[in-house]
Image (cartoon, rainbow, N blue to C red; front, side):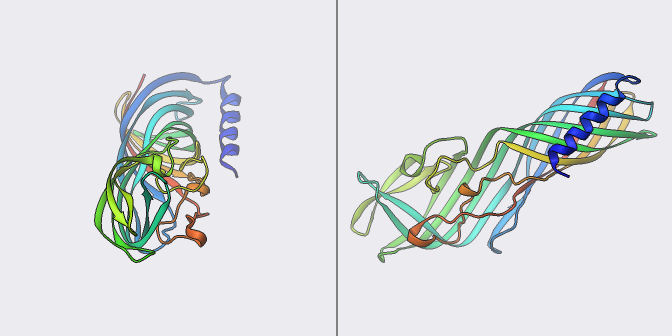
Length: 287
């Protein structure tokens, strides 16, 4: 069943139950332990856990004393710690002309990616003593996307000029419009192939970019949720929830392979399925 269909089913179920239950509200906040579920292109590519937070409001509709529905409106940070260490390439721009000098060599990347969503989970819950079990679906709207870290590279230009090892800081704003040479935040001169080129000191998200205006991450994300809450006392609870992404969150035209350039020194894109995973630990209160 499609993610949108799951949301519609939950909405219909809630509307059918409204004639016999009662409403209550609350809020929750806590930490997210995030990762991307992505097919690693090579053993040199890694995705590991990073940490964010969530905060939001809850509306609960109790159908019986044990069973009911709830909806949430949450701000939630998701993402991953991305790493790559292996054969790769780097692009250098010639001063004044904007021509590109390509180099092949070894790259080491370590980038923390943080995506901020407005999440709207729709859940069914069932109480067992002090425990509350829950399951449902959610829709997320991406409102912010950034990355920080560094890229270290050394190698040789395709014309044979050595490129000594250097490190470029990354200050990625994935909603930015700058591409190529315009994505250099700070640079320093370097002589390559007898030409005056720019060695980046820091770059924005689309320094190495396919020739289009697409963004790295899609605006909408859908997923399934499952979790439980333990009520410490009336109204106050501790909760754990897993959020499992269902849809590919990356745009293929900006999902660039770090391994090698394609024909004509083009950037190779990847048509794979990259999904969010988030484990949430919360403290909440229900009125």
